[in-house]
Image (spheres, rainbow, N blue to C red):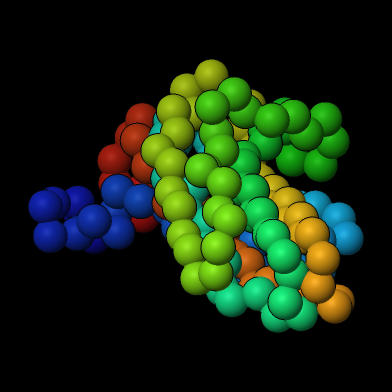
Length: 138
């Protein structure tokens, strides 16, 4: 289908950055490798639900990393992180210029707690890629 003002799907590639997960903060969650070939920008959207286990404080950080081959050499992309979430039921998004990034990207979420009894918090990320060098995408 040709792109036009009523067919935004032809201009975007949507990807799951982090599958919904109930995170205990033990380790960062690394999302799957996403091929962004010919796509020059994206929006990283991260969300968290309500924490369980009554922690005193909580933080949820989300960022993008890039890699040349999609499996090794992952590194943070400068300026590609959302504002830190410190409460329940929050979401943040960040517009990101990918013109200088390597071919593959992935989302990374890091959760930290202070106090509580086995605290956990649901987290997830989505990525909307756009800025295609050639249109339409599909």
